[in-house]
Image 1 (cartoon, each protein chain N blue to C red):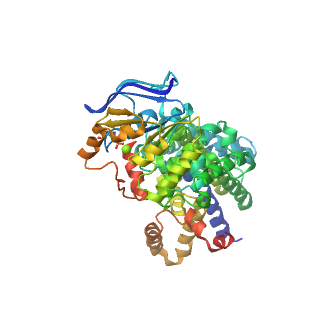
Image 2: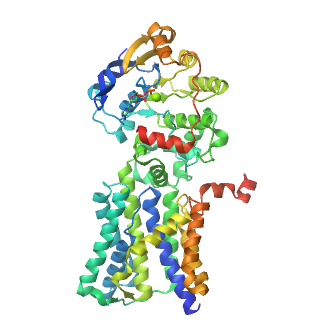
Image 3: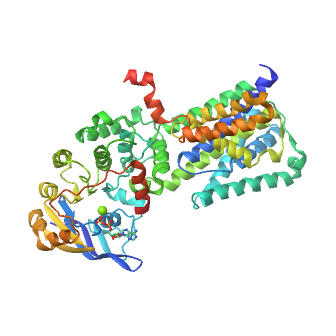
Length: 275
Length: 277
Ligand SMILES: Nc1ncnc2c1ncn2[C@@H]1O[C@H](COP(=O)(O)OP(=O)(O)O)[C@@H](O)[C@H]1O
Ligand SMILES: [Mg+2]
């Protein structure tokens, strides 16, 4: 089957230092593709390339055979590329529902709709849809609360909900389970397995092999911006180069990586540096 | 109402409208220190139109249109600059407007300009309510959502397909329109214009009202303008100490409520809201 996403010879250098090095990745339509690799391997950078935050130094990115390199940041989402952020990027002065509804922005279109009250009749269908997604992600009781100060796990799920309501063709999840405890993690796998639309192609960055094995049908492993292994999740996670890459970083792949729960403020600051 | 009370009420109304002029760009993270310039454009346009026989209501509308157009013309090039540079550019714009007005003899130059029709407090209050309603409505829409998102996350909001620059330009332009309304109200209540009145202090106060009231809700600037117009009046009896008292109030507020008097969390935590929930 032809790939929905095709990264062809992608290289990205920052001040002479190459972060992504001549990378080829193909992702089948409808696939759930895992992207693993130790910290600093370049996983988030790939997401930033796909969502238009960075531009590749060399190579080409094709989405459904169309090159997208020249499409600016605020139009990438029009192509159907939705994403979440590793370091959380919620609007602290908006409620959970409002944050989620922001994800619908690309679908709303006309100025008349943009100038209709969110609580009114014109927005009922949008509101209902956002509520539905919120409910599947277990956010029902939180919809009217301000995003500021909610627990890390809740914030992570809001990010996913916000990406989902944009009905993406290609969904990029950056460490959706990082910082969650094991029960939250299991719950998230179940929710994602059942709620991700069939025809949505998903690229998932995760360190938790259990997560990757359950959810993904294909996995790519990176180290130092290069592909070191590719194939079915089980064999990639056990691949000697992959194990070595994680061991070299002193971060056993099989252990859940501890992630300090960032305060909202810190998360926003880190994001400002990142993007 | 006594003459004094009328005067305070008129100033209060003008301050509230000016606070909303500052609020619109602030709500998406842009500091416009040229409010006075836009007020001057609204004031003088309305005064001139009125002087040529245009009815009062239409003159004010004309003033608002002029400052809106000026806002659009300024924001398109100026919003390429960000943060502090934007602020400096709007400040410079305001100074240019004041300098031009001071030197155009047809507008009275340094000796001032007499305005024909008088506007009393009641219709002024009606205009203020219209402005307030417009802001409340805008805040309740997806446009309001985008403004808050841009304030919280800056250009990062583009990831969600929000056309950040368009939102910023729209907010600054609408704010400039409000400033024009505030200026026109001033012109027709006091019936006399002096270019020197539209100085940076006027802009600073407008920004202060919006910030101290709080940017998180559309009601914040109203509260801010109300409190910080009336407090100095209550302190009037203390004479020369009133500015010290006023300054202390501002510093205390910044310490105790850095996000402004009225926040969404405060509204959420109101006792009757909780009982309803
Ligand atoms: N804007 C940038 N400027 C310089 N270096 C960067 C930039 N963004 C990412 N990097 C570097 O690229 C490498 C990969 O980062 P990243 O993609 O975030 O890793 P991860 O695989 O953990 O998500 C890191 O060494 C990081 O320091
Ligand atoms: Mg990362």
